[in-house]
Length: 342
Ligand SMILES: Cc1cc2nc3c(=O)[nH]c(=O)nc-3n(C[C@H](O)[C@H](O)[C@H](O)COP(=O)(O)O)c2cc1C
Image (cartoon, rainbow, N blue to C red; front, top):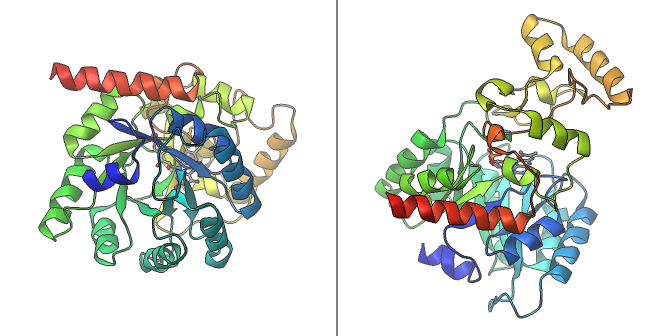
């Protein structure tokens, strides 16, 4: 924990992090989460200019000197998705902005993480490398290749993409803790992701051995997040994530062939595209119906949605839009209360 704390000296415990959700978690969200004592993360899909824009925005929003960062890094993180992004395009961004955390995810091969980590450390030695993975074996592989300063263990309940073969954090996390300890990597802090949407989830993750938590779905309903209004409405309407969300690869097939590495699928709100897929409707027909729906006034978010609406199984706990700072403070306060009452 000391290593994690010293790299994020402004952070309050328990550490709360927003997921670097591509095209959704920008500079406004990252700055607000960091200012509230969490770790704000920025995610974008392909465009390196988007990173620049969002990092510039975050650094302008973070009052100089009020968040101490003696090692010269910017007190926010950025996430890269390795299968979709080019190392030589990403590295100048890291070099220019020196974010406190560089988060890596979705490599085609686990060994790609070590290549990226080395390049990041080469231009910004003080930036910490966080790698999100979803199995004990991948955590061990990454630890052994010295790729990661922190491992984000992502469980099956997570919204958006993750390992198709997955388990909830309640079993994934303690097994990873034990396996890493046994292999001599007990010093690598683990952070939990997947299905955590309030302070009770945070307290549970800490009990499992996590040193902090990542929330994605909960932050989709933050005022600073750039979620389209129809997406947000579907999110707030969804209850009982066990029934209203599902993991499937079909969500990545809607616009054309799936570009994700084979080990990944994604969790979305159950849509008409998914139910058609289960009924055996062919992918060409599903794509055609999807394209027609997107062209409609409701842009495919109607009563019977056709577009992917990425959300985790904790979606039923997301009931209102709030300032990101209030989310961080509310969740942190609730977690501390739960821990004290144990
Ligand atoms: C809409 C959405 C987009 C996401 N995009 C990314 C991404 O670009 N990169 C990434 O590493 N993780 C991404 N994630 C996953 C999060 O980092 C995190 O693992 C997940 O949100 C945690 O589960 P939760 O949604 O139940 O809180 C995304 C999640 C959501 C909900």
